[in-house]
Picture: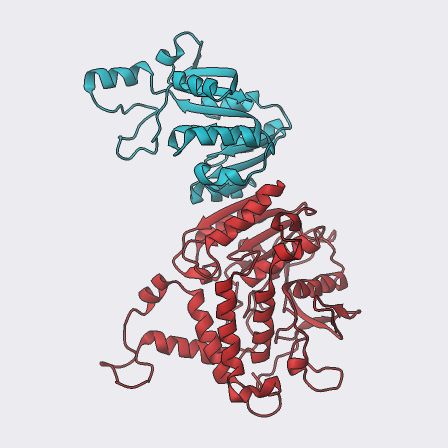
Length: 196
Length: 368
């Protein structure tokens, strides 16, 4: 699974083989294909972009064009072992509702997002006074799809408030793993495995 | 159509009477069909293509009446998305049709054409007849069932009612439940035919008079619903037909009028008006949810098939919302389904026209 983006590789390694998986915002289906081919999972996807969906269909994947804000409600309770939302939470209109839906549909959920409290972002705001444009947040504020920036501490707080259990967490700086120490300051990117 | 002779192609006669949803029986039943590509020794490569309202079995071969290429020639053939080097493609004329399968123009047991004595049929009856045809051909599993528009409804009905037959189901620009607006348009078409004095209560065969004017109007009205406002504007705008100024009369001043009149008229050379009545009636009745106790999800509970549903952003006759409803029903039952709304300028007819993204989805879905 070395060809996967680092956050996706972490998710792929930590999904139990043979699971039923829904990947929301699955892009061109690279994670789903890996989970199917290498972990024997029963995989399904949702993706907003038609071109990406066509790519997925061409890979033999079952992917529906849909919007996490609108279409998750149509999945029955507990219909998947895992719901995966990678790099998408910050693009939704109501991240809290999407998170609730993930844990309604899936027994567990992987959620990954760029950490808005990373020191580079903080510096950019502190010294430049401008919304940051970084490697993980490469688009200017007026055209970014990221409409609900959040930090690692924000996510933990939301989880605590909604009674969501954080089973595991992984943090990345660049493509390197890092420990939990001062993650909210040092990590560019976080991946959480959560459940009820 | 009264003057049109349909050349005899391939056909089977069903061994048993066909039991219809109405409670009536139809016998004898002939099903005219065409095939493309070789059937594998283990019969694992059969693909059933179901045709739309005005289509027929000539999916990829020259039409014997019009001399035009098959209606899905761009999709079906060697090296095409439905690759006949790999698949054995079967396409049958629906019952109620007029290209060789038993329909209202066929002889009833008394030796006279059925006319309006032909029983009202449903989409499921059309599929039932094709299932019986497949059995005659020795095929009890399909690698895939594929259809656009009414063809898509047949593919869905097949999966819902004969869940063990198709392994894959591809549905383009269709719906699981016919909405009121479409029922309304279909009624306009039927009323245009029945209002034509040459219709004669449907008993026009052999009288030398056929309701061509009514059928033509029905086709004109339907044709508008197959196109997008954008494509009509692009193709015709307000341009005049072979003239410099408006005639201040009721000739076809505008190109779009001339085009529609031509479409209507040429339709009458290849289609039987009574067939149009029966086929649109079948579509109006189509409601897979109703057939399965009001819950669409229940319709697909027993099928292990994978589904692919495609809609087009400019199709206002079978808008994306209808496909989405279908997909949500699949989601509710955990069925393996893909869905995509493709962008194409041509409205409902996009499934028949040059949309490379559709080719990609079709070949991707069939080659998995």
